[in-house]
Amino acid sequence: MDCIVFVSTPVSLEPESPFVVSRPPHEPGVRRRSQRTVFDARQKLTSTTGTRTSYDYELLREYAASRISSALAMPALLMVLGTFASFWVPFYVAFSWAGLVIATNFGVVLVCRRFIKVEQKKFVASNWTASFVAAETIYGISWATLALFNLASGDAELHVVVFAMMLFGVAANALTSRTFPVATLMSTLPATLTVGINLAVTGSTLSIALAAIAGGAQFFFLYLSRQTQNIELASFALQSEKDALILDLEDARQSSDLARNEAEQANIAKSRFLATMSHELRTPLNAIIGFSEVLKSELLGPHAIPQYKEYAGDIHSSGQHLLNLINELLDLSRIEAGKYVLNEEVISLRNIADDSLRMMQIRASTKGVELLVEIEDDLPKIWGDERSIRQVVLNLLTNAIKFTPQGGQILLTIAQSADGGQLISVKDNGPGIPEDEIATVLSSFGQGSLAQKTAEQGAGLGLPIVQKIMELHQGRFDLYSKLRFGTEAIATFPRARVMGALAPVVEDPDKLQIF
Image 1 (cartoon, rainbow, N blue to C red):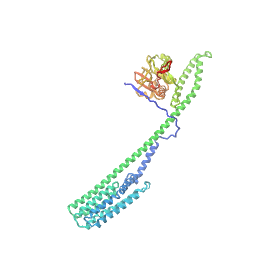
Image 2: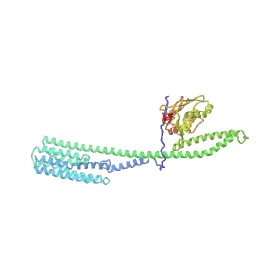
Image 3: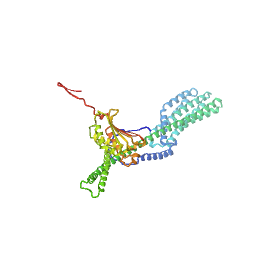
C-alpha cells in the first residue's frame, strides 16, 4: 500500500460580519422554476405559434423590420419590372400595375411602422397577426393583377415574361417575410394562382411546364419560410434557456453566499461560545485541582481513611485532564475566531525540542516506548511564537506516544527543509492511519478508528490545532501514513522565518567597516 500524503494550505480567516436572517438556501430557485412552468403554460395557450407570446412578438418584430428595410428596395424592383414589361404591354398598363403594387406595399410598411412603435407589454398577437394578414392579402392581390397583362397584349412571349415577373415577386416577398409564413403565403399565393392558371389554360407544353414550376416555387418558398421561422424559434428558445440558466446560477450563487455566510456566523458563534464557556469552566476547575492537590499531598494532615488520598489523586488527575481539554478548546476557538495572537520572538527549535522531550520522557518510559532525537548542527534560530511552537511539538509527541505500541520507537527530527526553512518531524512505527481517515483526524473533533478503540481518548483537537498554528506561522503541516508501518507528521516553517547569521562588525582605527 503506497504512502498517503495530506498537504494543508494556509487559510485566511475573514473578518466578522453581521448575522443575516436564515432561509432555505434553494427556496428562490424552486419558486422561480414553479413560476416559470406556470408562465410557460400560459404563454403557450395565448401564443399563435404554440410557443410563447414573447416569441410571437420577436418573430413579428423581425418580419416588420425586414419589410421596413425593403421599403425602398421593393419599389425600385417594381419599377424595373414595370419597365421590363413595357416592352410587351402598353406603357401606362405596366406602370399602372407597378404603381398599384407600390401603393399596397407602402400600406404594408405603414402597418409595420405602427407595430414597431407598440410596447411589448401592450402587444396582442392575434390582433396584429390579423392586421398583417389583411395588409399582405391586399398586397398579394395587387401582385396577382399581373395576369391582366395578357388582356392588354396578344404576344405569345408575354406568358414567359409574366412568369418571370411573378417568380421575381414570389422570391422577393418570401425573402422579406421569411419569419412570418402566413405573410409569405398571402403575399405570394394570389399571384402564383392567377399566373399559374393563366398559363395552364393556354394548353401549350411550355405554359404547362411553367405553371408547374410556379406551383413548385410556391411550395419551396413556403417551406423555406417555415424552416426559417423554426430556426428563429429555436434561437429564441436557446436564448431564453440561457437567460433562465443565468438566473438560476445567480440564485445558486446568492444561496451559496447566504449559506456560507450563515455557516461562518455559526462557526464564529460556536467559537465565541467555546471561548466563553472554556474561560468560565477554568475558574472553578483551578480551585478543584488546587484543593485536590492539597488533599492528595495531605498538607493538612494524614487522612483517617487511606482511600481518601487515592480518591483525591483521581480527582486531581481527572481535573488536569479536563483542564487540558478546556485549554485546547480555548486555543481552537481563539484561532477560528481570529483572536489568537502570536507573541513572536527569536527562538531555537533545538531548545524547544529538548524541553519537550524532557516533559514527555516519563510518559514514554511508562508505556515502554523509546524516544529518539536527531537535530542538525548549527541550525539558525527562527522567528515565531515559542509557546505555540512548543504546543506543536508536544501535541505531535503526545499523539505518537498514545498510538505507538509497547516496544515501539518514536523519532523526533529537527532539520533544514528543502526550501531553506526548518522542519519538525515526528515519526513512529505504530499501526498507521487508513487512507479514508486522514481528513477525519485533521478535522476538529475528528478521531480515527484506532483512537475510538483505545482507552486513552482525547477530544480530537491536537492535530487541528497543530495545523492552524502552522498556518498562522505561514507554514505547512504534512501527514504521511502507511498502514502497519507507522505515521510521520511534519511541521515546516517557511524560509522567511529563518534568522540568518548577521554580518560581523570589524572595528578599524580609521573607520568602521561592516562586511
